[in-house]
Image 1 (cartoon, protein in one colour):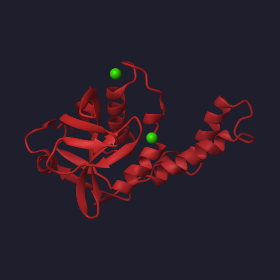
Image 2 (tube, helix red, strand yellow):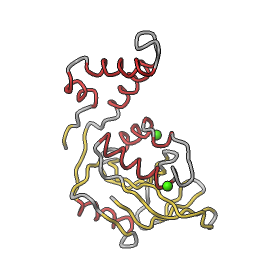
Image 3 (spheres, helix red, strand yellow):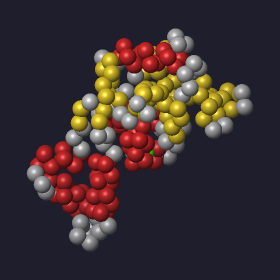
Image 4 (tube, protein in one colour):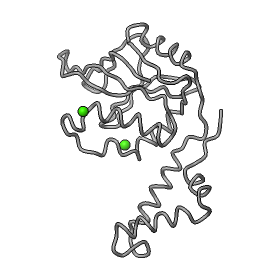
Length: 204
Ligand SMILES: [Ca+2]
Ligand SMILES: [Ca+2]
């Protein structure tokens, strides 16, 4: 286990005590004609940075790609093809991930066919986790979506290993609505509300 330095501390380290306050003032002066002093904008940005720093996990665990593959096979056997880009993966706890989803803006952007649709939501959520929390274990999934047994279409979404109750478990994430569902080992089909998600392959 290693300790993760909160964003707030990192910003302080960068430029001393007043660095991030000056940073917010600068942003506000560009966005609001009244500047920082009389605008709510500064408070909003300040609040956002505070919340972002609070969602940084206190602890994280690293596992090798062999260990992640063992977990993957426990859930899906050999049925789901997988690619590993890294030799080791950072894993965080379930609660920290949920807190992160609440303030992450991937799902805030409006769906636009082709330009900003399922594959884009899934790739950006994976990228944000690596960029902001330095968590590289979120998988990009290609699969299919069914409703009442009928194919709705081919679909992209995410799968992520998370620490919960002393175990590492796999979760399906629908990045368009921040929905997180625990996967049951032994099948590549996951029920999410009235839909069935089928997993074809995962890029970790
Ligand atoms: Ca979100
Ligand atoms: Ca697209």
